[in-house]
Length: 130
Image (cartoon, rainbow, N blue to C red; front, side, top):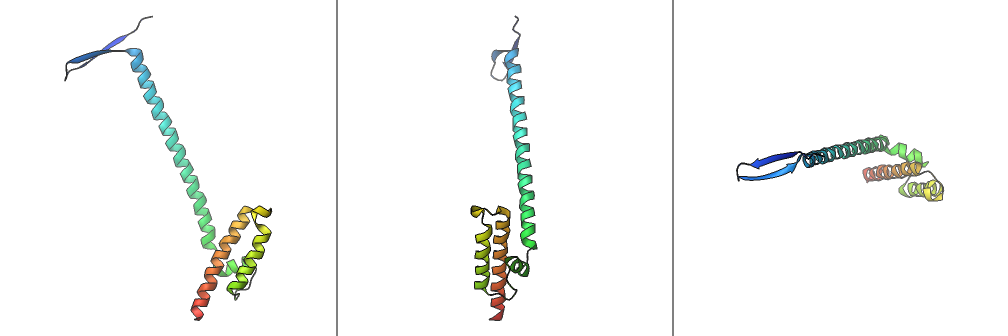
């Protein structure tokens, strides 16, 4: 087996050293593998962030689209309901659809968002009356 030698001389310092061609090829492959791994990881991270952004945008679209009167309708209370009535209706619905009691997690999240929007609507309405 023949080992090829490559002489690399540093002209600035006048120091010379000898490297095998196999070592240089191995080092180049290592660098290439590192670059490829970095690019794969970066593209996977970008893909994950894009998917998360799309999911967050969809969730925000649903919440923003929900208005106060619509939220009250989801809770099953009239538009002129008081804070106590809204809270009572929310607790009753939560007892039915909570994930710990066999309910659906998405339905529970929607109900919680509806409760938040309904309370904002009722408090704003009460503030206008005063």
